[in-house]
Image (cartoon, rainbow, N blue to C red; front, side):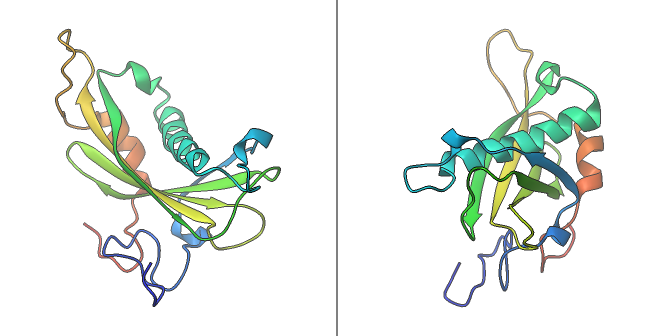
Length: 168
């Protein structure tokens, strides 16, 4: 964020502050564990990324009804990022809000908001990009492939452009 409180050109978090609960479509609650806190008494930064990964993949698993690891095309993480707005920590649960910014030919761009307590504003927001690759080749190569129809069907209902952006 720059000194005016604006976010960069991607718009994933903010223009005027943290994203709010209204910015997300699908919800899941995760529990925090004692070990999630770091020496400073707040959630360790690596734990945020574990929560992002779980929010996305749990949604895909539930929305498709499939073990997504067994599909011939699998999503690999090509990019992640996080904007922190306030601390999170044990023992309160965290609500994750999920939204999709873009469904491409071979990729999906997700945003995940993390909320703890009654605040309408996110404590953090993650950006998570899945690129789909061939998971069947015996030579171990994993070329980029189109999204499986099951994944597209699970992602499209979550589409909502980032605040301040036009739909793509």
